Image (cartoon, rainbow, N blue to C red):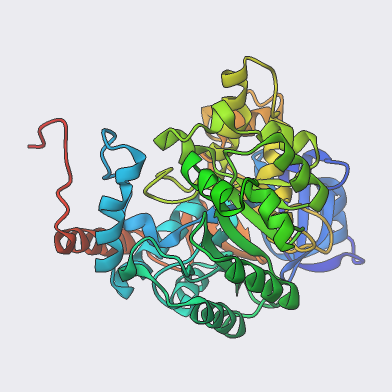
Length: 464
């Protein structure tokens, strides 16, 4: 090392580095230098090593290095109930499980569910997420997320037209007060990893006044407004009736809430005219392919996501919830996004592997209003970095690194995860907590919760 080398806290060396910068540069032997929580250099390993001396060095040994995935839509509180709703049930019966789950969920259960979701996201290479809200105060969710070390936007459940009186959060004023309270307690600042957004249920469960004033709150605090929309034909028809023959997006345009700080989740059942409005207003859309394919909502048959991308709509990716997609893995969501529309239409490529990777990183960062900080490995951005091990067959021969990531490897070889310059997973081991102890606690609480619910977990095959 030269005596003129600059100090760094961390160097990641010798990786096949996918920068996702403006030129989409890929370094066959690349390195990243980190000082504090910021990236100070990206380039060929020889150049970065010559320029910097670090306190800690990680040799990627030819593994892929990428910006962390962004999961733009999750429900952290649902994970204790995943995997038990029978395939034989139509989607409409999901609430037979969801309602008793929600009513019997304790704050300790919710924290365990959040922990399980966070462990899964880290292991699958997600460094930033957007949670759609839970039953309890956001501070308890934030405490778990901070303990794991992830970055994320969180919220509390908000709707003034709830499906059941027992899960209502009060009238419109009460909902708005709850939204603003959380933004004050968990403000969005450059020095924090967890902040509050303005999230609400959507899909006809929020009044026009709640939507409009929620948008005003988001505008005032430089946050995003986030809600579900057009997941199924039922909520689309509801808006058609409510808006006297207008589509949901036309109605939102009339309300004045479309824009680049609005994130609409699902958007499966849309019209061509709605796609044009989304593009013209720079409104963000979150594509959750697994959530639809799991319950047959028609995402591959009727979804217009290729058209959205072609017209310039910013489309991100989301995993949704444990009672729909069953997994929090943006790599698998990217695979689905890049393939299911081809299969349904008989066309290639509809959404390419390169576009899917943009959806999983840059588009997610833009949708959450943090593109200036994350989404790519560039000087000045936060050091949110994922390193894949090269010791998995899915990464070989690895002649096209983007195709290998999206089509074959995805998240199977995630080895090291860095958030805000801190290594929170190294060599497959969590640095801040004991993973096995967490699983034992999580499983015990899940069993107790389902006993309280009285929910009989059906099995089509005998369990001995």
